[in-house]
Image (tube, rainbow, N blue to C red; front, side, top):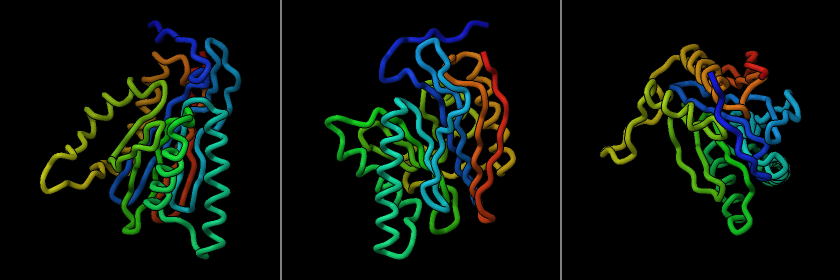
Length: 223
């Protein structure tokens, strides 16, 4: 089975894939740990997931220098917010804050593609997906990165998120249980690593629920 051919691009050479799935009382955010440069693997142990707040995490793919600059900016401004308001941002507020930050740089954007996942004020799972210039949407599930074109059809087939054009609007959370969502995410990455040379090595899965945050890991293909 041949893998997808690599296309050399100086701003896309770090690759990687991230996925997020929201449920009734949980959110699953996952990303692989491979950082690539063309056909070269720069490291097999680079985390693409950042904890933004107690109930909110962000997974990012794309050019990792821009991703790291964006993460530092978010962390510093969130710290200022906590000092001023004596509390952390909610997941929805953090999602809007990230959109504003990306849009502010729209004429020279961060080459990063992000998903934000967490729990909203009602304890429900929420996922926000972005483009490079800050357009975002709350969805039940999303994938970004080099393997997204392989993973999204599988997620669509299994989860069938309601259309945003439905009136009245339907809840975007997925019907799966927490364990079923984790198994689906693992299946998605196991499939993507067969075709995408930028995705592989190890999978990090962050699960947020009412009990807190926990991390799970799974080994992926290393070739």
